[in-house]
Amino acid sequence: MPYLNGHKPIRPKAHVLNVLEQRYNARFYEAIAAVMALRTSYLRDRYIFVRGEAMIPILRGLGAREEDFEAAKHISHLTGPDPTLDFRTVTYGRYCIDPETRSIRRLETQPYTLTEQEDYKRHDSGIPRMFDEAPTAMQGNTVVQALMLFKALVFQGVPLSPRPKLDYAAPQWIVTMFNARTHTHQESGIYGEPALEGVHSDGSDHTMTVMLGTDNMRADSAVTYIHDNRETTGVRTAETDPTLIRGRVQHQGFLDTLMFCDHDFKHSVTSVYQDDPGRPTTRDMLVVFTRKPKVDGHVSGYADTLELHAEAPLHVPMWLP
Image (cartoon, rainbow, N blue to C red; front, side, top):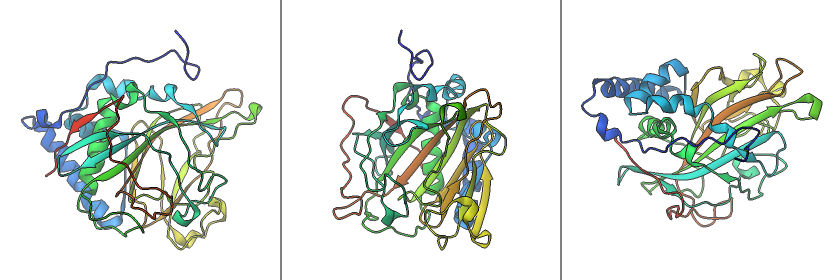
């Protein structure tokens, strides 16, 4: 069998989470109560940070399978080359959260583009990028599916600062989900930067970042700062104005989860460092962008397709209160 990203292939059986099967399970309602408490904080503060030990019972209550928690720690072995960054490997998929049909569906692939006008200032700003598509091990993992459902439960009905040329009359939400592995290996000249672009936003309405794991990462690595929108786009974290910092969090454990209103803030992430200088370091994350569909004339230069993915379909039932 061929190796992928230095590891043996992972071929767990894919499943589809059906939250409707949990409606007679007491822990489902405990999970919903916990989500609604987090939603209250999200409405007030416009961001939440949830430790993994609190996320696990929520995802179990939504129906995530026990064996998928362990499997989720290994899906980043399947990530492929990033077209513009040598320190990162990636897979990604496009999905639709549809409150009308109460479902989450896989959409066909489109290029991914962010621009300086969207507060994303980097050497590849404005360049359409294609990545390896989300494999079955990622898409068919019920923990990953439950994370999308969790996000939908938190943000539904939350007032937004609208972005130009997004269709806020549409009921659907477009989800772009990345599984990103950041590498640092100084001997090879590889220096991992989770946010090489410095202070930025991601052209999204709601952004969620979830830790899947690390190997040999120094404890002071990858600190996320949330900045006031008045902060200068593109500056390094060390150059920012401390009076404009609105939050500081650090993903440290499995399923530590940050979610924030992307257009209400900018954010930055510090570098990834090796703990043992003799071994490479990896940091594995899910990064989930959710926004309304783009319309013609959007600064990124295209409108969204809502066509379903022909080769790798997914249809997850969704429960909304």
